[in-house]
Amino acid sequence: MFAQVRDRHQVGQVVRDYVMLTKPRIVILLLITGFAAMWVAAGGPPPFGDAVITMIGLAMSCGAANAINMWYDRDIDAIMTRTQRRPLPAGRLTPAQALRFGVVTGVLSFLVLLTVNLLTALLATAGLLFYVLVYTMWLKRSTVHNIVIGGAAGAAPPLVGWAAVTGRLDWAAVVMFLVVFVWTPPHFWTLALFRGEDYERAGVPMLPVVRGERAAKWQILFYSLLLIPSAALLYWTGTVGRFYLWTSVVLGAAMVAASVRLLRERPPQMDWAHRTFGWSLLYLAVIFLAMMLDVARV
Image (cartoon, rainbow, N blue to C red; front, top):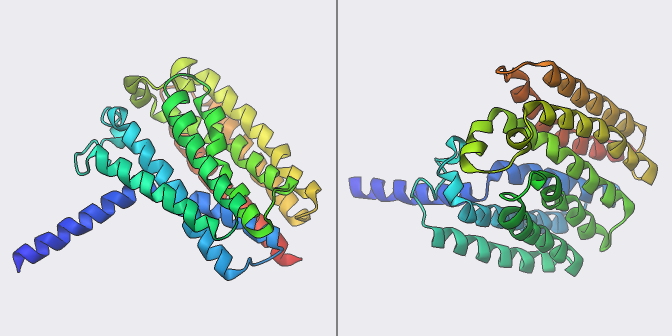
């Protein structure tokens, strides 16, 4: 009996480790942006079958990219305090297992999304490849602009969601892409502010490490200001109304206010770095929810 309990525990741990490879919390946030794009493109609830298949395929694609990222970054994950408990640096999974899981899941995601339409499958796969080949294997360890350029990968889900409904890309989808793209640098730079020692030990050239905290805080403020007109552009595509417009302005203003407070905070305090990081997560989820609510009101 004890052997059976132990076996079930071991199986459960393996399953949890494979799920951890996908970075599920990040995947959920990306799925919100993809589903919101489907909702806006459809002018309301998207077809149920297409929505389920698209979300499954998109989750697999994002999860595959994250798993391959963990495989490639296992050396620096072992150095950084934040990532030392991940399955690979902790020794619970082997690099070969992680890579195999990522590649197989990525191929399956393409096949799943292909049942929706070819463009959807191609866009998701392009996002996966960009994240793995361009961001993870090239930019992350080589340039302070890693997050700025690499943010294009995380901005792909709205394009995927839009294409799943329409079979094409329109300006509204491009604006949604832009919102996530502009949001990414301040989000990750606030994380890098209070995890700077980790990135420095690992040799990852994040902006606060290379240019200093003050320069990073100014850049966070700049991109937070840029979020307001970027998000407002969606109103002028004619796909959403004034409810979304004013919600986006209020959310953007709050993001700017948090960034200004962060700029005024003096080292070694990091309270507002933590708060701004948390607010950025809330900002992205709420602004895409506002798109859906606006369409539902029409």
